[in-house]
Image (cartoon, rainbow, N blue to C red):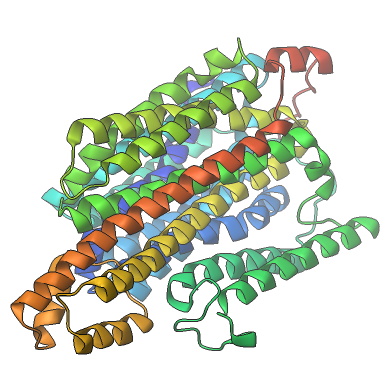
Length: 539
């Protein structure tokens, strides 16, 4: 076993999953440091995952052209520059450039190359072990992220995490000399720039539309810049993204028919098992990252916990995910992936119901920690199977493109989870607060009218102290201000519960996706296919 190579690849994998976990527990501190809103930080977090999702296929193809190890090194270098800029960021735009864009671009080069380098440096049983270790390390990053980010943010500053990332990248770059470059085909493929622009633009429009739903409204307009047919702009932007993606698909088919290199061979998506695995990866990340965005809002904004306290309370989910993900390969040797994933989804559904019961003005630590632990166990069971589902469905020559599809689905799910559940929280908050104020007899008609006017312009998820300060500044008496705070705090809890209920509905819908997952053990599928493809010669 090439442990030095595996250590380098594992370190890179750990780095790629650490960021978002850290940012989620630092939301309140980021809002304070940059004097901004939760909605803005939501956009920053979603943009990071969206940048990766939009460029992942292009990043994989660039690796095919220039070599996977070179793409790996270039991607890490860009990532380090982004981490350095993030650590020094002085405004939201500089944070977006460093973290969301530069780190996202770097990760889009690193992750597809990492999958291909793993396949090229290991074979047979060692390859299975390597993929298992990388999956466990990804789980470790999710496990360590909240507690590490919470501790550093509370005791020092979140910026230190990104300084540390620069140091880790430098160490990884030194270790890349031990990695061998898999052989490439005699003919170097050409990059499909048009396809890259179409895929990135389509995904960007969809996620941007979902992000703006909290401001524009889902269907009925609220602060929509234009109102086509009297409706919000949101569905039209999302639909435009779908049209662009349809154009991307048509463009790929056209290139294949002309014998030109597509960005991704669409024949891969005709493989039912791969299609099911990719769809499930999107759904799993949408659920997980959506919940991981919502829960810190409850712990920090509603209850007033700091980043470390938030990280500690999210730790059971991370530990449960890590332990179950590590046990996934052993379970896969005895049970089929479809059954394991369905059991995992059932456990995740149970955890969302348990979490719903804990969203109260006062936190029941025992019930909450139990619910988070159950969430981690269910998610770990799902995550442990999906990478193997995708990779077992194709041969060695398709691993780079399959890895690109796999990572695209994961990052698109992450950005959509943050965008969708974040938008649901904000729109539900505004709706519930408006209804509470209208029904509250303690509030005068003039005060109610003023509240409705302000809510019509949109809003953000803020602490109740800010609502009290705004009411006092507007000249309202203490009784009215207290009534507004009561109504707002009730609306906060209702909004969070609605978001978690929506996550539970996504879990139920995900059972339909599992119908394409394997019904037999991976060992049986490999035996049926015969001997594995010969490992490619290495240059």
